[in-house]
Image (cartoon, rainbow, N blue to C red; front, side, top):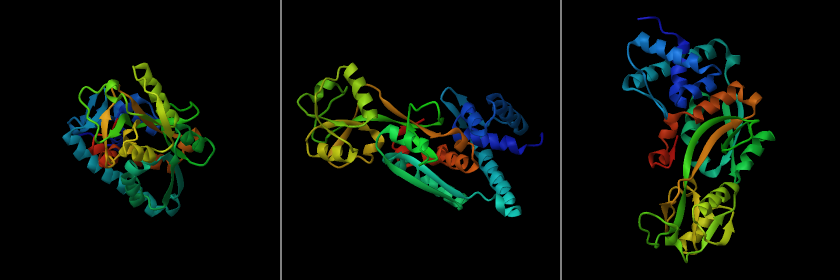
Length: 304
C-alpha cells in the first residue's frame, strides 16, 4: 500500500463535509482536478471505494465512513500538536453571523456546539433579527457581520457557498378540509394573509403566474403573527417551511400547487472569507453531518 498523505485525508474530509468535488475545491482554494486526483490516489492506496458519486453530490460508502472517522482523528491530532508546540497559533477571536431567526433556531445549534468544543477560543455572536433577505447582505457589506446566511440570489461582490434549501408551503387553519391534489380553488372564500418581505412577495408573483388570484386581506411582517392569525381562522398564508417549524397548534401545513424553494448560502466579503477563523466557522456550519442531526433535517424540511 502506498503511503497516505495528510492532504489526501484533508481533501476527503472536505468532500464529505461539503458534499462534492466542486464545493471542496472552493473550500480549500484549489482546482477540482486536484480534488479528484487526491481522492483517486487515496482510494487506490486503500484498495476500496470511499465515495459514491452522483449528480446530486458525493456520499461516503461504508468504508468511506470508517476512513473518515479515522481521518478526523488524525486531523484533530495534527491540530492539537500544532497548538501544543506553538501557543500563538491557537485560533481565537470573534465571528458575527447575520441570518434569519428560523436558520439560527433550527440549523446552527449543533454546529456551534461542536465548534465551541473544538475551538473554545472562537466566540460566535448571532444577529437573527433579519426579516428581509437584503438585511443579511447589508449586515455583511456594512461590516456588522463577517458571515451571512443569505437567501439567494446575492450580489456578485460576495463569495457564496451553497447551503441548504427549504420550501414555501401553505399555512391553513387546522379545521380547513383539503383534498389532493391541492389547488387554488380549495381556498376560495378564505382571506389571504401576506408575509411582507421580498422573498415571500417573489413567491406570490410566481403563484399568481400559476393561477393564484386571491386578493390580499392584510399583510404582516412576522411569521409568528401570521401563524396566530391563521390559528384563529382569520385566513391562510404562504410561508417558508422552516419559519413554521414545529407546526403551531391550530394550523396545518400543505404543499403549494407549484414547487417553490428558498435556497440559502453562506456569504462573506472576499478578504474576510480568506481569514482562518471565518473559514473554520463556515466549515462547521456547512458540515452535512451536523445539519443531518438537526430536527429540521430529520423531519424532511431542508435538503441540499
